Image 1 (cartoon, one colour):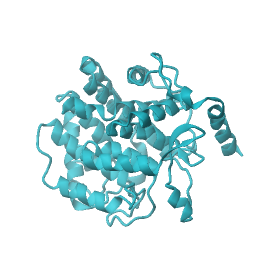
Image 2 (cartoon, rainbow, N blue to C red; image 1 turned 180 degrees about the horizontal axis):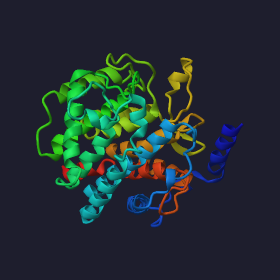
Image 3 (cartoon, rainbow, N blue to C red; image 1 turned 120 degrees about the vertical axis):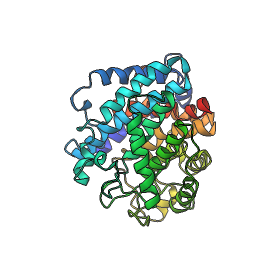
Image 4 (cartoon, helix red, strand yellow; image 1 turned 180 degrees about the vertical axis):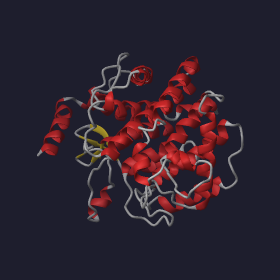
Length: 379
């Protein structure tokens, strides 16, 4: 009943607001101005973060320490990426955004921010960076992407040495297995994509050619983990890469953002598949589905979880937000406008932050609203 109430509560405004209202832009709510406002908001949180970062996001059990830990780490990792992309897109803000990104990484690498990963593996990911042990710690790929974007912005930043170590570690692990383990017994292609992006960004930030093995690894990734519709498989067996699940919208959309740093063509292909297979409207609102219609027809259990957020008539909060970067990459202004209208309305955006998203939602929106800009800014 609680889920039904939440769904009805979220749907009620879209039954009252005409579709045209969701596409109306104003100087106060402009998509182009939102990243600056979000950057300011997140930087203030970074300077004095509230205990636990406030209320737990919808769909996360406050007692589930792992998910709450991932949420805290994800907030600062996404904030760092967004700050850096913003600085790459708008050179006049370069110095300011570099410092903000570095501060967010300071928070992301704290022992308490990384405790969720340490608890699952039984040791710290950072203890393996010099070649000891054989744990994958694929979550390092997320941190590596933020470090790479910061290094594009400021090559000699204080985290450059950590960036070198993480990239070298992930490069060795990627060559050893086609399916990096995120946690013991768990592997997710989207996390593997983040690790591939880390290695590609590292080479680019250092002015080097990508390693010779990377093209083959990306081709293998595409053949293994994109389903016949071109969407990204959610879960696989560590090591072998055998599929454990079907494709999902949230992982596909986030994966498209990561792959943009390693293989723009593959990223665009995935984005087009999301647009063709999952993008739709619900009550006149532009959304992205978590599951393709064929999944329902085949009888798959199509449920929401901590990754997708609550599903409302099949629409995923996460997939819809993550797809903003894909819409920009494709240059699809109509899709981008409708996604922004949805995010702005249901995120309760007030010109400064998204009230319903919490710190993590705001950090993700900063990263997605600036996604696709840095590639153009840096060639």
